[in-house]
Image 1: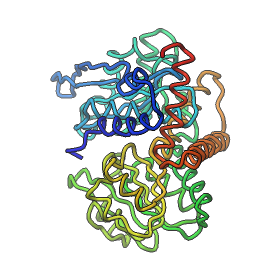
Image 2 (image 1 turned 120 degrees about the horizontal axis):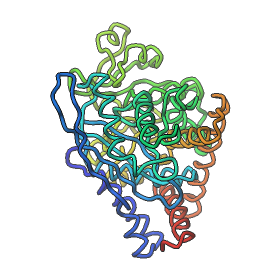
Image 3 (image 1 turned 30 degrees about the vertical axis):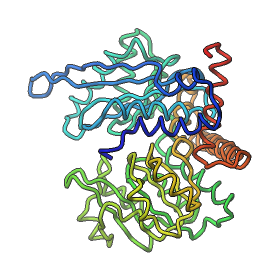
Image 4 (image 1 turned 180 degrees about the vertical axis):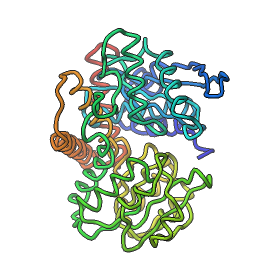
Length: 427
């Protein structure tokens, strides 16, 4: 991923569809770049008494359809271009899911695994101290992402409420249950991926029962995608590939007869690292990082990081793969996309496949506004309906315009954003 700039990738994807839509130059100029970017420093007193200063970001790409929405990532290699790309994709994700929100993203350059609980809390509160005048339920609503947790969102919501002098749960989503969080949020992104896979199988006339999948990642999205693929579709997940924070390298954990996601969850830490020794003892084969890509499966679900299916790695994909469901943001580069198109693999693009998380975040904000909370069954039923509707809007566009699914998703999303911009008199 070192030689792939995610924001340039997001712009290339946008430009291709903008050409097909013959978008006005002024509209293109507004949508190719974020509307607002915030850079700030967060001074924090560490447990040893020293002061350490952390770099923070917040990018608001477009808010024509509603408040900016997007997670806050904590990663040692976080960059402004990663945050820009993710904010851009959030604009398209909210639009394709047809929820009244725009695109935003935040970040802090830090490895959360190196911090104590107290240090994490102080960074969370420091991030809000820098941004509180530019976030809020009606202008920008952050959420958890890579490296952040519901508890951290609870601290951020509390800090914002203190600064504004009013209890404001809707400023942040992904909060803990009991602190304004929503039932179903934990499962939402992974299950949303599976709802779209189910609809793709119907379209391709594939019977789900007995199908096989390989998954990249074993964080929250991958965990519930695995559970959903097995328990909802009746399929088998043969492997998961994930990063080992102790060895500083990635592995693929394989069981050809099918992994047990609940067992793997029991031996996985909060950062998605599986206990290798316990996995081996339970009969899992530990293979190299990219082994998940070459498995003889029907479905590939890249659900970890961006840029894993590239011009080089796409050649490893088995000839029997029929569907790629992008649980991660930006897992496929444009060069690899060209190969997938040629091979006729049905791709469910990231900002459609993984829109379940932001959709449930929207539900959380609605519940916060009402001060009335739905049951888990209600949340997941509403999520299924939204994801199914979004999938078919994109599929219909793909078939009517005779374009690749990713381009169709962009067409649906861009059209909705541009329409909102025109209605507001921006363009």
